[in-house]
Image 1 (cartoon, rainbow, N blue to C red):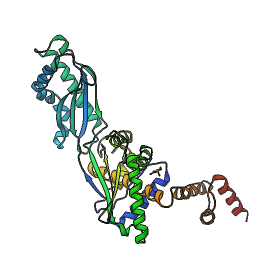
Image 2 (image 1 turned 120 degrees about the horizontal axis):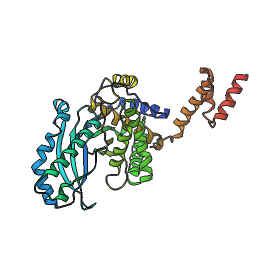
Image 3 (image 1 turned 30 degrees about the horizontal axis):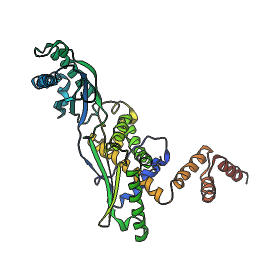
Image 4 (image 1 turned 120 degrees about the vertical axis):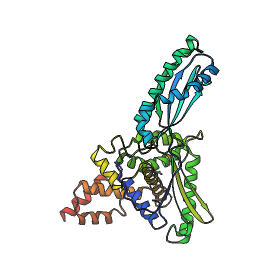
Amino acid sequence: INGAVLTIPMAIEESSVVAAASNAAKFWSTKGGFTATILGTEKVGQVHFMYCGDSQKLHQFFEQYKTALLASTDEITHNMRSRGGGITALSLVDKSDAITDYYQLDVRFETQDAMGANFINSCLEQLATQLKTLAAKHPDFSEKEKAIEVVMSILSNYVPNCMVEAAVSCPVNVLLPTVEDSKLFAEKFVQAVRIAEVEPFRAVTHNKGIMNGIDAVVMASGNDFRAVAAGIHAHAAASGQYRSLSKAEIKDDVFKFSLRVPLAIGTVGGLTKLHPLVRWCHELMGTPNAQELMQIVAVAGLAQNFAAVKSLVTTGIQQGHMKMHLLNILNQHQATESEKKAAIAHFKDNTVSHHTVADLLAKLRNT
Ligand code: MEV
């Protein structure tokens, strides 16, 4: 990734995911490797509240007390500010078109190497309390206007400005051993990704393949994979239709495949230093900071997607899956190395199932 060789831990029940990601890593290791770029690191939180009254007066109130609202979080943000983070923006949003009397405090954060959920939620709850206190005392408000009702204060797992891009590219001709196969492969690959851009049924499965890689690394690094998945799927549907997260193109005889995903993850706080295996996983990756971890996770997603689409447009997905399945069944039966060799040869032209593998092993063991 960006010229460095890394070992990436993956925690996942589907063994073929690890095999596929490894295969893609090997493939691209001789073709320039993966690049990854951070496009933004902004986190989002909202105080959702009801204000019954003159909207103009609420805006004036907000402008007058914006500094006081922010100052009320000083104690909470002290440490984060000393690390270069904190609240980066605070605005009042009028949502009364959607729901009568509904407004928001929209808050933007920089949380450095922390995912920041606790930090963000503490700031929001403090802002909500201060908002109510200041409104209750505001001389220009009527009694109804003074009675702001806070519905909830919570971070958003949709982080469109906390984004990372991963990419691979190489001349089309070197993709496969022959120029002819390479061209055909590149074209089919691009078609497959285009289908996932326009066809939601395919897009969901295509993106599931990306999440195979992303979730496995997010989980191994002790981060919240549900938060990551919710935000990524929202991004996939941001155009109004659920679409592929990755893009592929052939331009001037160069094949390019890339992926953009929003990722709010951390390398400090939460479980990252507490859970012994998680700590070990961070060490295995070379103790990345949050931005480096974003890059690693995005690359795992792209690698996984490349391997899946590559096998789909060439051999089909079952060849690799059945190979893994066969090895899993052989291991269940404690097959020896020579039994495994014989079984792999036998199942080149025969159907793998628990019963056919058990039959073959029984035969081998009786001779
Ligand atoms: C299986 O876990 C993931 C795939 O279905 C992804 C895809 O279809 O692109 C192979």
